[in-house]
Image 1 (cartoon, rainbow, N blue to C red):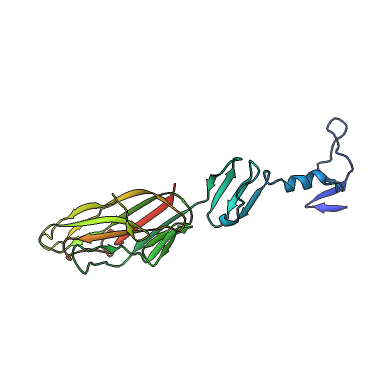
Image 2 (cartoon, helix red, strand yellow; image 1 turned 180 degrees about the vertical axis):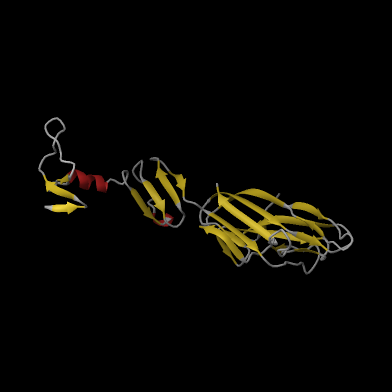
Amino acid sequence: MALVGSHAVKPFVLPVNRGTGLIDANEVRGNDNALRTAYVAHDADSSIHLQSGTLASRPATATAGTTWIGTDTGVVYFYTGAAWVEAWVFRQFGGWQDTTNQTAAAANTGYAMTFNTADVTDGITLVSNSRITVPSTGVYNLQFSAQFVNTDSAIQDIDIWLKKNGTNIAGTNGQVSVPNRHGSVDGHALPAWNYFLSLNANDYVELFWATTNTAVSLQAIAASGPHPAAASVIVTIHRV
């Protein structure tokens, strides 16, 4: 007699109905069931259990109800009988910051914001310090904040926008004025907003900025007195 934990396993041929007998609480009864036809049929029915693999290996069509887990996309797909649809998405997010100052070599010239520290990542990756790269097709929410400093005696403007795969995304620009230096104190501004983006698998997006004067830069502020350090740029993104 085998043991399962502290319970004895006793074989039986037919199940014991509740009305004809009781099963000892200390026993777990099992049936070898040499005729496993029903189980084999169940296992062969792709509409019952989950299948997995890369998106490229997913069959073009399947039995209605088939469920496929994309191991490379983090998406669960469901076949309706006519088409594959997304049923559920595994967590996909990322958050990065930069702890250095970033400067503009020339006025009115676009520069990519870069990041040197990963805060949280799951599925979404940072490539070449600026390219936020998504693993699967979907809608993403990207949020950022940027700490600008102006050492000039005049107010200066900055522009911030997005590029996708190296090309400007229309309508994404925002313009902010950075206060001038007053007395011995530099002017500061902390623009922050978010974008909803429709992206394809392996697309990447970048945050770009330009300034009307090179006296404006992205500044990482050191911890001092009651406050902790501040990153020059922070960005987060997640699939919605």
